Image (tube, rainbow, N blue to C red; front, top):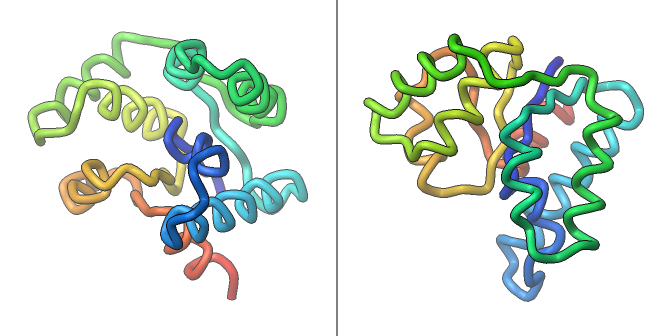
Length: 144
């Protein structure tokens, strides 16, 4: 099973853990990473993750996230097909960067797109090519 984690998902363990929701999402995301390390899930990576991660002002976080690129089984660069698909997602009211992440994940044939972004999660029914979930929901579905 192939998964794509967006940048907000990768950053969740670095967020303020005093809120219960953030703590639960961080724990679930760390569990997903454990499954990736064990080879039970395949991680997909994209140029958009590189692009957004380079803008991270915290060097420690940036380097920790960047290390996942070498663990990823799939990596995709920008292409005309990605841009065209992202444009179509934009017509659904999805923000441009999220459109590009989604298009990358779909073009790589990912089964799941994991995010902690409420704006994107609220659009999940509009995207038919991939299942968009938050990490806790994914863990509930996967860990049976």
